[in-house]
Length: 279
Image 1 (cartoon, rainbow, N blue to C red):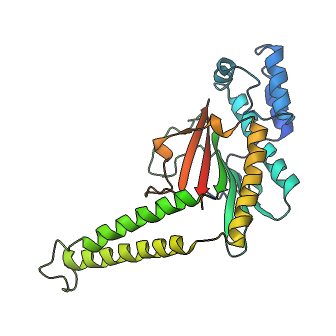
Image 2 (image 1 turned 90 degrees about the vertical axis):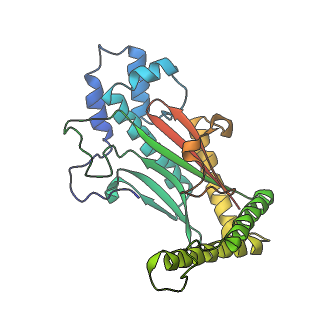
Image 3 (image 1 turned 45 degrees about the vertical axis):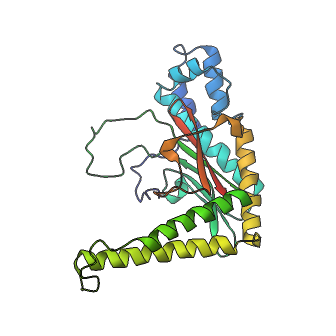
């Protein structure tokens, strides 16, 4: 969850005019071709993610604060334009809502699904972390894309995984069996935690076992998530083959599952995560 800002002392995306003013200070320092490239990013002619410059030039540029600010502006506004131009009923939250980033959700009826996330918050989440007051990171931000794919084989594999966990839980014995019904103490704590785990996995099993056909909400989720996933990949000049598995982002949350996978694409100071959900 992103931090909501309620005052003016936070990291907003620069305006076009501010960026043009900042870039003027680099004329005579950067080459004309590089100035033209950065001006094109400000004008939103193409995405900063696209390979319009070499990796060597991108790494060199990533050392400059002006490039960071321009890249953030480009990612934020090109994504905003894509969502506003292609769908009217979306929940879009960004700088106007006090967020250091851009979040987009779609309503599916009784629930919603996330379509996009750009997080450029650069400070520590915990105020207990001490950093110098003038510290500035060159990190541009993290982009998260989302897609949902129907896959009966993986759904069956997940069902069998949950069933194996249930079998193990059913066979487990209370290690504090001497007084399992005594109020309080490790025996009672183990008993209630064990019962909670069984209930959780029985619910997961029943949900998976009952999912013989996709619901209308499932179909809508697949349609809208994949629509914007394709639009964003096209805008970035990427394909699914440009992403790779990374253990740091395997699974969703603490538990590994067959039904979620996160692939990663890393660039200079930018990480793009492709979050895949199978149903």
